[in-house]
Length: 231
Ligand SMILES: Nc1ncnc2c1ncn2[C@@H]1O[C@H](COP(=O)(O)OP(=O)(O)OP(=O)(O)O)[C@@H](O)[C@H]1O
Ligand SMILES: [Mg+2]
Picture (cartoon, rainbow, N blue to C red):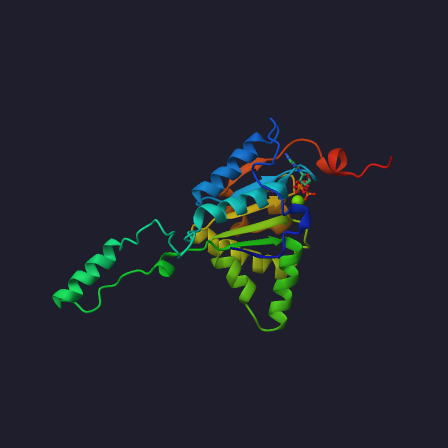
C-alpha cells in the first residue's frame, strides 16, 4: 500500500522494466533494486534535474510493495482444488477434540495477509502537510512517516530549512535510523557536505551515512526526449 502524496499521472507508469539502463545510471538502478528486495537499507540518490531519480523512486516503492506484501490471490478456491487445513488448524482441531487445550492460537487467512506500508512525499508537500497537521493539533503524518515500512522522500533539499522543518525532519529520520527502518531519498543537492551545510544537523548526517549512496548520471531527459515538438 502506497500512501502520502499522489505520485501523479506523469510518474504512474514508472517501473524498473521501463527504465533505460545506461553506464551513467546502472549503479543507481541496481542499488534501487537491491533496496526494494532487501527491504533493510535506505538509499540516497544524488543527481541533476531530469536524470531519472523520481522514476527510480517510484519503481523502487512499487517493487518494495509487491515483494513485501502478502495478499492471498483469492479466498475462493478453484473448483478442482481441495482446501487442505493448515498445520496450526490441524493441531487446534486435534487438541480440541481431545479436550485438552481450549484456545491454541491459530492464524486465519486474513491474519496472515500483510500489506507493506510505503509513504511517498516530495519534501515541499510533506512540509506543507506537517504544518497543517500542527495547526490542527495533529501528529498523524509525522507518525505515519516515522512508522511506515518504507519512507520515500523526493526533492529533498528543495524546501526552506526553517527551524520547524529541521525539527520535524530530524525527528522522523532519527527515529527511523534508530529503528533500522529504510528511507529512500532523492535530491538535487550536490553532496552530503551540502546537506550538512544546509541543515547543520548531526542526526541527518548520521542517517545519510547509513544509506546506500549513489549518483544518477546522464542527460536531462526532459529536454532530450520529453519536450513536445512543433511540426
Ligand atoms: N533512464 C530512464 N529511462 C526511462 N525514462 C527515464 C529515464 N530517466 C528519466 N526518465 C524519464 O524522464 C522524465 C524525467 O525524469 P525524473 O523526473 O525521474 O528526473 P529527476 O531526476 O527526478 O529530476 P528532478 O531532479 O528535476 O526531479 C520522467 O518522465 C522519467 O520517467
Ligand atoms: Mg524528481
